[in-house]
Image (cartoon, rainbow, N blue to C red):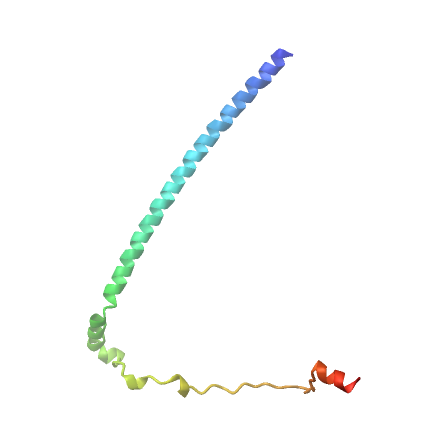
Length: 117
């Protein structure tokens, strides 16, 4: 009986050791994956900041003004004037179309009590 208990205990220790070995390597792989993802995120953030800087550089007002002047013949762009803008009160909104099929009379509860004592 003791031999059976010793063998089961030994098998359990071997099984737990194998499980711990697998979990150790799975954990190390997960940490490598996280590190790889963090470096990829950092690279993408850097690329995004570079693209934002390039966008800001390319959209400088003086550069855009010069480009519109150079390409006036093809584009026909004119500078914006204050007179080109309107007021929101000048917008014609359509009238709401509300249709009531059968109007009904609404009375309050206090009026009904007075009518029927």
